[in-house]
Amino acid sequence: MKLRTALPLAIVLPVALAPALAWAAPPHAITARLEFKRGPGTEACADEAGLRSEVARRSGHDPFTADAPARLVVLVTRKGPHILGSIQFYDDKGAPGWSKAASVRANDCGALFAVMGGDIEYEFSPAPPLSAHAPPVVAPPAVAPPPHEDPPAPANPILLRFGLGSALGIGTAPRVALGLTADVGIYWPLTSLPFDGVSITLGGRWDPPAAGHVPGLRDGEGVSTSRLLVILAPCAHWWKLYGCAVGELGQLRGGGDGIALAVQHASVYSAIGPRLGVEVPFASHLGFRISGEILGTVKPIVIPVNKLPGWTTPTASGGFGAGLYLFF
Image 1 (cartoon, one colour):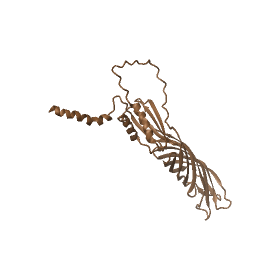
Image 2 (spheres, rainbow, N blue to C red):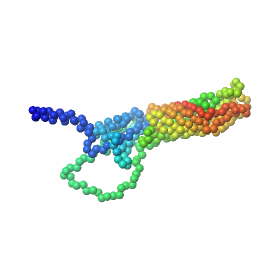
Image 3 (cartoon, rainbow, N blue to C red):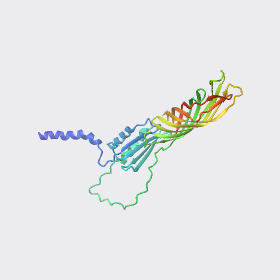
Image 4 (spheres, rainbow, N blue to C red):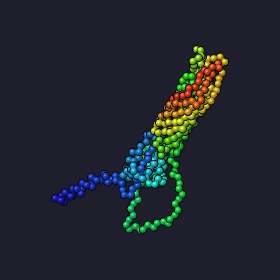
C-alpha cells in the first residue's frame, strides 16, 4: 500500500510544482528596484508591467523587487521619428554600473522593449557554476581602481521645442483682447524627481490694438491699447500636465480712440504669475496644448485721454492660450 501511494505522489508533485519552479529566481541571480518612466510622445508604448513581462519571459523569473538594494533606471523618450530607451544600473551602494541605450524608428515600441529586455536578461543572468574539476582561478594582480566617472547621459537628454498659437487676454486691454504667440524652448526628461521633466521657454506675444469704451468718455470715444512682450516661462511636466512660472516684459502702447488729436503713450509693461496647461502629442513630433494663467501687474499703467485718466491696467489679469508645438 505504501508503494502504491508513494508512486503517484512522486509523479504528481513535480508536475504541480513545475510552474512555481519555472518562475523562481535561480541562485545568485541579480535583483533590483525598477524605476521606469516614459517621456512625452511615448504614451503608446507599454508601461513598467510590459517591460517586467518581457524580462520575465526571457529569463524565466521576475528580477525586480521593491526592497532590493540595487536600482535599475529605465527611461523611454521620443526624439523626432525615433523612440529611444536608456538603461542605467546602480549597485547596492548607489554607484553607477553598466548602462545600455537603444533606438528604433517610428512607433515600434515592441522592438525597443525586446532589445531592452534582452539587455537586462543578459546582465542579470547569474554566472555559470565552475566545474568541480576546473583548475583554480588565479586572482589578477591588484591594480588601482579607475577614477570615478559620471554615469553616461540618457539616450535623449534634451528635446528642442517650438510653439505657435493664439491667446485671449482679460484685463490686458479696455476689452477682451486677442493676441499671437510664438516660443522656443528646451525640455529635459528626469528620473529622480516626482515629475517627468522640466522645460524653459522664451517667447513673444503681440496683441494688436484693442479699443473699448471707458467711463467718463462720451459715446463713440474710448481707449485703444496694444502690447508687444517677451515671455520667459520655466515649467515642470507630469504626464500630459504642466505648470509654469511666467514672467512678461515689454511695451504697452495706448491712447484715445475716436478722439480728435489723440496722443499715443508708450510705457514699460511687466507681469508675473502662474500658468497651468495640458499638452497632447498626437504625431511623431507634433502636439497640441492649451493653458490658462493669472498674472499680477508689477506696476499699473495709466493711459490718459485729454489730460484725464482714461484707462488703468488692473492689478491682475488672466488669459487662455492654445496652439501647436513641435519637438525634436
